[in-house]
Amino acid sequence: MPKLVVVVDDNPEILSFLKIILEKNGYKVITSKSGNEALHILENVNKIPDLIISDIKMPEMDGYELFTKILENEDLKNIPFIFLTALNSEEQVLKGKSLGVDDYLTKPIKKKDLLAVMKGKLKRATFTSKPISISEDLNIELDDIALNLQDKPQTLLFLMKWSEDYGARLQFLFPKNLGSSEVQNLGQRLMQTAMSLRNREKDSEKLPIQGGVSVDLKSLHQKAYIYFDTIQNNDIYMMAVVTPKLNYNNILELKKTFKKMFLKMKQSKTFTVESYWKRIFYILNTT
Image (cartoon, rainbow, N blue to C red; front, side):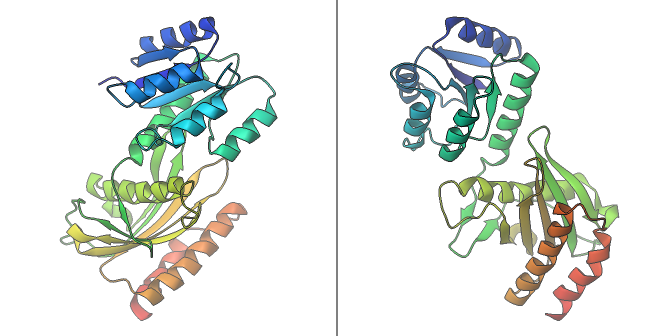
């Protein structure tokens, strides 16, 4: 089913330009010439849109106010949002970031940039849309993972990377010979957990942009600890260990170890993930 995109701009030429490009690339498009009209459309549309693209400077209701109104609506607040902004408008970008918008398209809009930003935004939204139950101590349950661990080592180590350009990718897996689609799917779901926590930080001061969380993989009878952080260029990295047993002391020591690894990555220092494997294995078997 085509993704539904709402485009808001008081310039009819820009609306027409964006509508033509998006429809040619398989999107279904609803256009609106004002913030008030867009809000009315959003509150009465049959299908919740997959993405909103809005100009900032508009009469009556500008893009900032539209975005704020959307955040106040429980049915609409999770729709990905992209601002259109004029060239060299640093003040507009800073104000948008203070509201929680982190994606912008600069006018005049280039087709390649438009499609790339939309693709990244929609990938992240899809990746983080599956429900996850979070308790106050940040312990998460994932009970729909399918993975055959028979005749395989019971402890796995993942390094995943999330980029706006291509979504989630596996950077490292130990043991290396377990790169099956099932194992990679497990890494994807753990990365989804990290991204969900990071995105929900906007709605709760309890959830950090970087940090760790324990995960109960019920269907696998396994536990996991994941640690995530932004390294550079807004790329988010996640380190995760999956193991049969995980206690509080394990988690404390794993967090210290992962922090050291991420610090080296931030400082662009050379190191290998393998060099930390013995330390991680020691933590899991002695603490």
